[in-house]
Length: 146
Image (tube, rainbow, N blue to C red; front, side, top):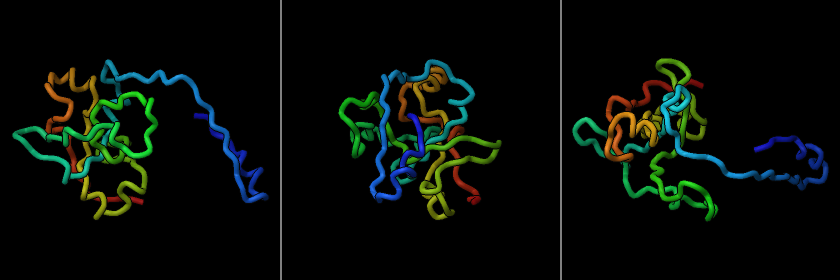
């Protein structure tokens, strides 16, 4: 994605225009658990999960293709997409995410913060299903900053 401030030039007319730049979609599922991958967290609504033994079971019927406003040729449409938002670990006990995801404790408390949701981590941990994540990789919000 390329960014510009061309919209500032159009501000006088009241009708901003944006140029989109498209390129080949060469994304792929990760093959190895890298540090950035391990630091990525998915926010999953607690109401869409169940705890079975030492695993958090994510709603299995939530596929990417079921999301609104998704173009028909987007990759990974047949893969699970149970998260509502994502974030990244920025300190041992601190996650950064978008404000619209969890801007207060009431909203943050509605989510589990799930690490380890990727095909590479599934394979590395020997898990049978992508929609099951060990509870050791699941956290709850304790405090909201900002």
